[in-house]
Length: 504
Image 1 (cartoon, rainbow, N blue to C red):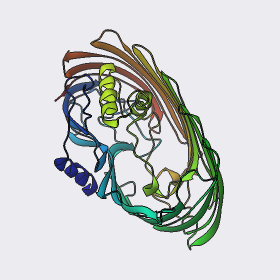
Image 2 (cartoon, helix red, strand yellow):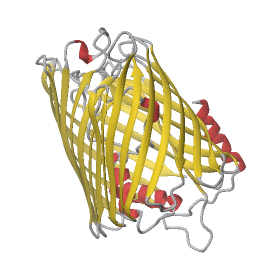
Image 3 (cartoon, one colour):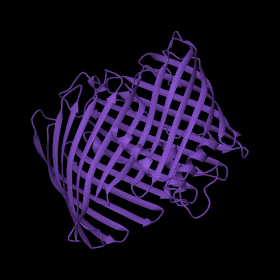
Image 4 (cartoon, rainbow, N blue to C red):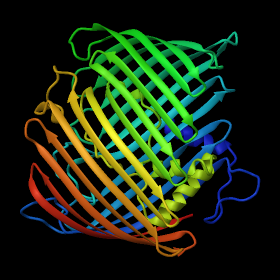
């Protein structure tokens, strides 16, 4: 949290230009920072707020959600902050009133003239405690969800030695905290270094990197790992690069005492055009064969993405930039060729989401909390299609997870399931009926299965209307219906909600 506060604090010393109205800023002066506060007021009526198959009870709730969005592209600070505070009051039902937080922030601060930087990021979201627990349509009184916060701060220095070799030294600290005592909190610390040849178009390039990491869990066994790698890069053409990797690692993740393992790997990056990219990387490591595959192709009105990976989650501080949500990311990719400036592009994406009534940060696969290192195999296909007045997004995800630490019990779903498989697919459709009014619809189908026989299923459909009530005020009415089947048995839920959102 201190890192996110520091990122916000840097704004006080930076000049900013805020877009006026709903149009893209005109003129030659580009905004360096966009700040937009907003407030949302809504009411939701659910027919089965207690997620019961035999004794369902309706639930009526009011909520007020002030929010703040910031996008920065200054010489010293680059990144974004998206925060909202939600106060929910229950007029009907037996749920307790609650205060909820949602945060998604990621940024880099240049603290010393391009030589020393501090990366900060943070997220607060509701996560499923169990893959097989009860769920509700609205999530207002979901007993299977826990507010989870992740904060990361990573100072690093880098530069060039003698004009021929780059170096970087980095420290990373990440904390994960949940509001439930049923799952583990964790703290990870990583110290890493890298040396490599400068990427100036040579036929051959090289790099060596080393990392030492310590993971502390509030529930379960602490682990430590050390890795050293050497990489050789072969530039076959300006668009095609091959890589070879060899190294060694030592850890106590799958053994009680530290053990050593060899690392071998190969990779390829191919960019045949500005619209298409392909990358493949394969490594043999202590958990077996790991891989990362990413394909992306863009046209004027479409974005196609496919990613597949098999990796261990014992390195949470090595994750990439935080995602701002499936739909937001796809629309951002659609607009990137038309608007390369990140500040203006964020304004356009946010405006389009409001006009169409689409949720920005709803992932298609709802993951679950774990209390130790796990092995994850994931495949995801995402497609976005943009018409003159319509947008369609489609996402298909499959994942399989298992616990790596066989000596740990008593902390999560892996106590009774060696493997947990999840499948999910969802589609969102939005159509602008008039310049002021839009229609949206969505369908989501998700299934979780454990090898012990445990299972959970969720099928939901929704439809809504969004209209502009004033130049910076929107109203949204949404109806939802869901069918669920988990450890508590099958049940259904229907809900209707109305919301007014005003941007200052």
